[in-house]
Image 1 (tube, helix red, strand yellow):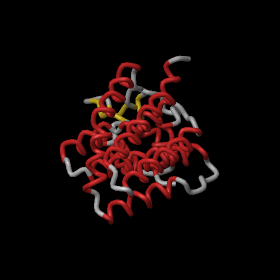
Image 2 (cartoon, helix red, strand yellow):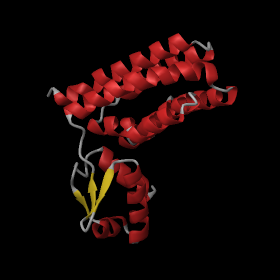
Image 3 (cartoon, one colour):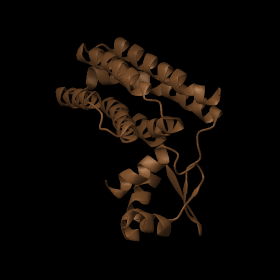
Length: 208
């Protein structure tokens, strides 16, 4: 397993707790590698918003979403992503639709024996699915916002919840069906339902 994948699993499973200091030396000893691949993986995770580089202090795991941040993200997504889906339904090329369908099909493939690794991989694929829809809308600013928020990795980090993947697969299929029909209204409706359902699935984290 690559160093990046190992660290991602530790972060997503909360083996490395939110705001916990991440020791490069300790990880290098634990994984039996030099510091270089550790630093490269941490830099990649920093870009994804899962770790933070603190001046004179090294790396720390990013904070977990607060309830307000969680609700704000859902509100932002509801403003942006249904509109992006509607535009994508009419502007998406055949090649982009095929690529999106392939990505969705990959998310339906049988999971490896390690459910945590499968869950983390699904989170990354889910993020790409939404980013590709935003890109197909041909609105560069919208795509930039959707991509930079890295919503999906942060949501899936809230709690390991295997049913999330099965529910999302069904909702992705509804979005794709609207794209195949070139139906902007249907695409917006399906995307809105997907975001609202995702919000409902994860909000239980804050109600325990």
